[in-house]
Length: 328
Image (cartoon, rainbow, N blue to C red):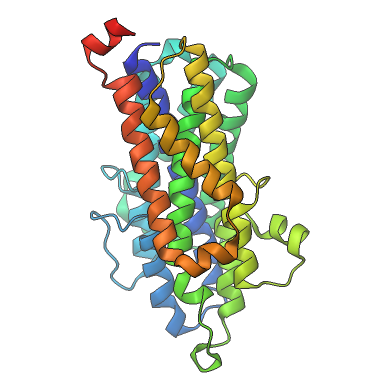
């Protein structure tokens, strides 16, 4: 596969996953505003920014609706939902011949939906977000459209090398996002002393689970008893839940192995070593071991390994030299 094709499919998938994740965070936190105290509002929206990687082109001015507008409609920001969808469509346009007609129609429909002229008006966007029902309705439509695109991709595209690069992008982005989300919630998860609690801790824990689409799945495993250790164990180590770190890393590794097989054995010992070690760590560690070594430190290591895997993918499949290609 041409490196430009692999690159475009990889980033198309990452941008759509990022758009879905950002939309979900905004939707969850806008709904939590109905039950939040004044003291928790400041921390909650700062945590949203932290869980999105603290984007430099987004500012918090104590107005959740203004922040939501930035993270939703800022056209020239790749931190915004609109920016991600525009970038995803542009990457898809570059490889139009590699994706199915149904995929292009679904993505183009989403693009047209979020770039309607009225959406580009700051006044209209502000009014939309300040209505009680409109923001969550709009955000839900975007989430559903991304889910539909993923379903159409899986059912209409041949599961060859191109499809595998889409999976690598999806699960790379999801693993990084889940690690940052967990890190942003550490203060709320580990407030051990009763005098530090303000009565909203269960609401915060529920918000974390809903931000990872995990509340119902968690309850089926642990019942509705929300405990920090169980929440951490589920979102880190559960082998079957699609948004857990373990599931995401294992899925990414399987896709990389499939790419290696389809591409005729092109491989990198560095890439295999990093992805294999990270997968094994999540498969064979216990939550107690992770906690004893420091949760934030562990999450930083996961993010570091994801960055190293990304770099190794580029060195092997995208930015490789002519000499290495001829040698292969």
